[in-house]
Length: 443
Picture 1: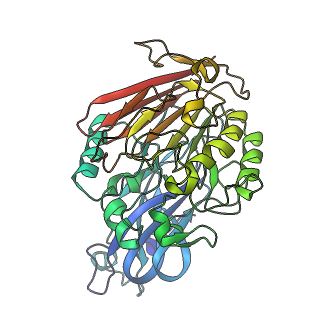
Picture 2: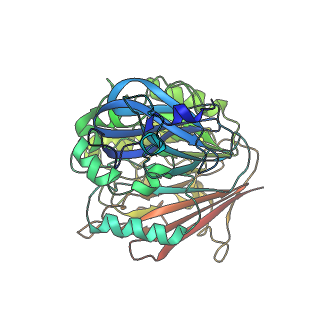
């Protein structure tokens, strides 16, 4: 709604306000983005009303959104937005006194203005950049280096969204861990790009997917009723969303029931059957294939979760036409060619049966991977373990899984670009070197 200047004068934004004003100690950060809505969250050091002033012009923030109550943990949803549109916003609270009529006293004191761009209409092809971070939350020099390398690489190119693949905040996923490892580490990206996380085993030390309680579930606002596309899951533990012509699926490989009869697998089948997007990208914590700091062949490593994701969930993903599987947990980078149908342990991998297209997938190498535009089951996916955004292994690791044609024990993050019917992924190490890259083209 439009605000007259007299009402705008009531809005006080916390930074350098009067002595009684609160201070923003976390955020703002963006959640659950859709073409017509955005959730804005932040935290203050004392309770106050939750208000966001926003608009499409930096100096005319004439729209107002707020939530009820006086709180320190602020969650405000902006609605009736225009797709593919840049918005400017500031967060704060209404002043406790009416305007005095004196311009100097009534002028709002504002936090730094932030900006975001809403997703395009669902199904629309739009160049999309995704930053992918696996196991980032170490709060150390390596995490800083990986962050800064990406900033330099992307330059002025906006990050449309970013993914956390779990183990987001070491060692225990506490609120203090998240404050240091995420909110103080990535403030600029948090306020401009929607964040979509997955739960890892370290996050689960302070959270419970069954009850949807604990720090992870307190600090993230994720879709449970298909608000961002896909199929209603009824839980924030696993969910899906659409961005442009891409369908993203987040699974909970740690806490939720991973059995064939479990709710998560049944939801996944329905979700994949219902999507019409050109691309399907799945992300979760425990890898289907790895010989890094974790061994996906082991029945005891990580409680057998890697075996479960490979034997139970990967067949459903591949039958549903998944194009890319992104995982972390193993603090290395490993990547397959275009493969399908391998659900056993590594000795059973047979390249003559399981590789759909050989080569490194590079236009300047063996050629890009090619798939039919029309989605079909079992036409191949690329599995990427990118779990070293906070650190690589401090000890030698085998890195010899036969399904993986590229393996590095190096810290880094992955950059995903989708433009129409072309997908490109680049792995950047902490030194800024482009260590792996490949492309998938649909035709």
